[in-house]
Image 1: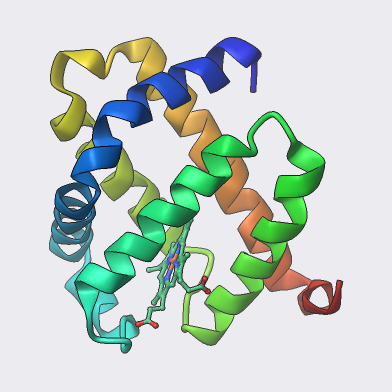
Image 2: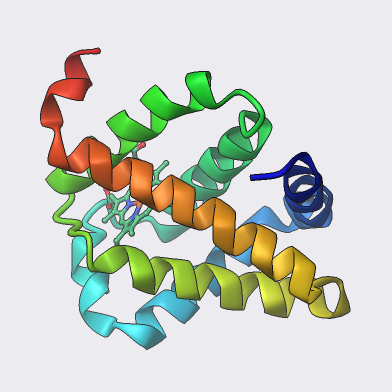
Length: 142
Ligand code: HEM
């Protein structure tokens, strides 16, 4: 990712932070509309708590984008934990599409082609690293 893309992600995420609960709710609505079967994976029940965790994790990842050596082990472990939740590689595309749709709806005109590309690149990196962690479970010990 270029420094400009990191900047675009940070500045576009900023206005969504105070709306975290609404954004998370919209995200899950998008996700379950795309694939209703995914609902069964979220056994924890309380979706508002789950949504808060997702938004916190996104915010944390965004903070660490310019420190990839710090971010990488966090994502590897997150990906490994996701295998326990029943998440498989194929689910990542669905989550990515739901995330982009949610951002598009939330940001309106602010979701320019450039901003979309920056988020697509970032999600691709995050998903790829999480999938790496899922494929090499030994990383959990790291
Ligand atoms: C950018 C990618 C993702 C991020 C940042 C993310 C973030 C998180 C976080 C922070 C948690 C809380 C538990 C923990 O820290 O281990 C969690 C749980 C979970 N995530 Fe994700 N996740 C991502 C992708 C996915 C994908 C692709 C799926 C597939 C549908 C998924 C399904 C779940 C499920 C089922 C749980 C557990 C829910 C429960 O306990 O009820 N996540 N995720």
